[in-house]
Every structure is written in C-alpha cells, then in structure tokens.
Length: 161
Image 1 (tube, rainbow, N blue to C red):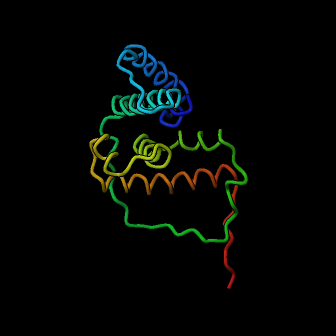
Image 2 (cartoon, rainbow, N blue to C red):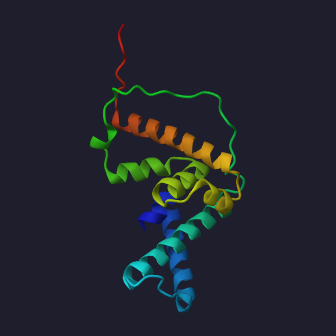
Image 3 (cartoon, rainbow, N blue to C red):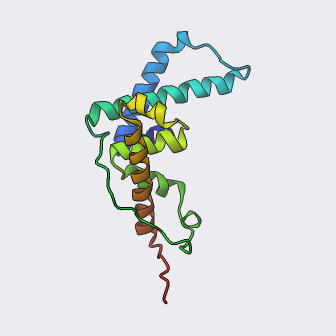
C-alpha cells in the first residue's frame, strides 16, 4: 500500500491502485517465475513492479497530458545554514507532502528517487522526453522542499551584513 500511496493524490486513489494491482497479480500469478534463489524476495519484487506499473497506468488514465510542463528560467538557491527538516518530519508527513505534488511531478519523483528508474526509463514509460523527466524531477524537489518547510514552519536563516 505504501507504493500506491506515493503515486496517488488521495487515499481513495491509492486503494484503487492497490486493488487493481492485486487483481492483475491474481490473474497473472501462473506466469510468475522466480528470478533469484531467494524466492520470497523475488516474489516481493515482482509484486512491487506490478504495483508501480499499475500506479503509472492509473496516472496516465486519470491525468492525460499532465506529464509535460514548461521550462522555467528561475532557479531558487537555498542557503546552507537552514534547519535540518529531516529531524522534524515523519513518514506520514513526507507521504502527505508527496501527495500534494502534481501528478507529473509526483510520478517522476517516485520513479527516480524511490523506485530507482533512470531518466531514460522514465521517459520511455511515461512517453515524455528525457528533458521533461529531468525538469519535472527538479521542480518536484523544489515544491516538496517548499511544502515541507511550510508545513513544519522551518525558517531559513538570513545573513545580516
């Protein structure tokens, strides 16, 4: 369910992805063949892969044409002396913040950072350019930082000259 929550905007969507994934798993279980000697981990990986691809299919179905974005020319620089947000946030807060991202940003962020896909793989899977994948990841990181800072009231120290 945690995989589904990362890709969905709402819990109801995550439950739908979860249910669709298990329907696919039950329909295709006879095709499963372990890839590794450790059959349990091989099976877990197979299930995880189905959940990821089902989540991507769900995003495509419900968010057509939302995987493209305009390039922005502005860049935000964050000072090094800010408070460490990881000390103040929980797993649930991170998932909630990820769910607030647009579908395009959320999907690319999950695929790249959490699921370990390359930009080439993401581009092929989502039918977007590699540049769009990189841009969406950059913007997703920026937005996620801003969401987490706002929700946790993290202050950025300003240099007084």
